[in-house]
Image (cartoon, rainbow, N blue to C red; front, side, top):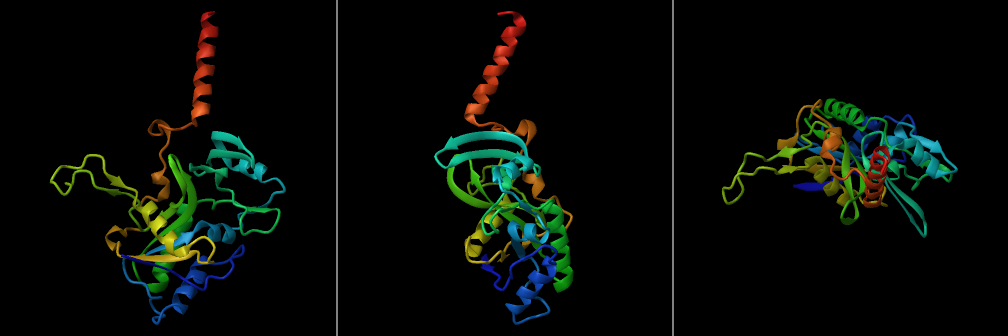
Amino acid sequence: MSAWAVPGIPEIVSGDDLVEVIAAALVADSHDANSGGLVDGDIISVTSKIVSKAEGRTVEAADREQAITDETVRVVASREHPNGVTRIVENRLGLVMAAAGVDSSNTPEGVVLLLPLDPDATARALCAGLRQRFGVTLGLIITDTVGRPWRKGQADIAIGAAGIHVLDDLRGTADASGRPLAVSVTALADEVAAATDLVKGKAGGLPVAVLRGLGRHVSDVEAPGARSLVRSGPEDMFSLGTKEAWMAGFDEAHDESALKGE
């Protein structure tokens, strides 16, 4: 397996055609203009920031906190600290992340960048466009950086996907000792996102990368996207922070006591 960043992506502005921008960069970086250096089975990784910029998802916000509030569906946890307040929330895409994914880095003063409106739909359009442009069967993911419960640091995950099996279901197969696997389902799209982030980096101006060697996981453009990775409802065992869960339980017990006249 190999991964490399694609140089030559210019600063993206609202209205840019990302299929053409990415295709031009691939051609410029390849000796084969017809294929852009791509082969069947390649997976293209695109940082969500350039998608948001192309879609005009910038908002003038003197108060970044208001922009976070506007993108929030549900507060999972909120903590004060010397530098302000950190809010972990569920945003309108169903993603649980700090600040609802609102980003103020690499934007003009007083402007924040929101996540794409529908990352899976954008991934499908980009994947289909690049497949048509180069005549190869490829997958595509749109990535964003998140923190993780129980782990320090951040990692990239897929928030949009097309043409790739986002999950690799190993249940029913056997491990190296011949024992049947009962619960092993690999978050393939997230692992591709993290792998390609290693070559894109955070400050190198390289928002697009290609990963080669996982062609067996490339699928139809209309395959389930990254939204299918979101765990919600009864499946979400950690829907609240510790303090918030305790308070919710306390309030519920208090209300039940009041109803019983205790």
